[in-house]
Amino acid sequence: MPALTLKAGPDAYARAAALLSDGGLVALPTETVYGLAADARSDAAIRDIYTAKGRPSDNPLITHLLRAEEAARYARIPDLAAKLTIRFWPGPLTLVLPRRDSDLAARASAGLGTIALRCPDAPWRAGLVAAGWDAPLVMPSANLSGHVSPTTAAHVFHDLGDRIDLIVDGGPCARGVESTVIRVDDDGAALLRSGAVARADIEAVTSPLREPAPGAPLASPGMMHRHYAPQASLRLNAKAARDGETLIGFGPGFAGPSLSGTGDLAEAARNLYRLLRELDGPGVKLAVAPIPGGGLGAAINDRLQRAARGR
Ligand code: TXA
Ligand code: MG
Image (cartoon, rainbow, N blue to C red):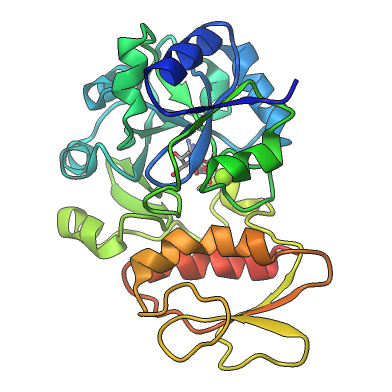
């Protein structure tokens, strides 16, 4: 049966809580992208997430907390990590931390000694608690593995509508790119994935972030897989369309589709995956205007480079 879609609100959260208790899979909106949620304590439900997405089993998931204070139950929290949670949670920052023994399934972090934790800025945290659900959720982006992340309920339905139980529709996501992923251990903090929190804002708390050593074993396993890959070809830093190309603009002076007519990076992040999905298709040739690299531009350029390489 195709997934039911319900508007975010008490009825949707009640249905979501019941399905999660039954080991079901529920797509939920976050401030970054839509996620596919399952009970982080349930090995079987987590296995179903990997199957539904077609996700390689060595790519660990992010555990999403209903309350920021719960982090210490599941991970050891170095001082630097505590500072980051105070500054950025709830919000689009994921911390990879030394894992503690807990009731979470080993599969939640693909059997690693670390665990990724995030407390999203999303109304369903309170909504699920009110509906009687009170456990962390593993939640990868709610797309087929290898597709771009979904930023609307319709995107989720397109990829996973016949594989999951419920989609909670909270409208388009406010940020549009995934959370920033930072690993914190006793040696300091390292950037594993650029994302919705700009590097400079994190470095205001941590001092300079380390880059994971190139090729370091499993620094962030997900980044090694084919990812963010449209069917279309993609040419970056394009000043004008070549023969047969559709040019995606940024800033004033572009006629066709545009990430942001005013050159606003936050708007560009919100439009990025929607435009890639709308314009994608077999044989399509896309070109993208230059995007500055500062602030959110780092995440946008990272995703575009992956999309360009991914085919
Ligand atoms: O914004 C987001 O983070 C979204 C929303 C739904 O919360 N979630 C998301 O999850 O993007 P996913 O599974 O698509 O990406 C998680 C990333 C992957 O690159 C994965 O390899 C990395 O986080 N990751 C998770 N646990 C890790 C760990 N223990 N060590 C290193 N990297 C980890
Ligand atoms: Mg993903």
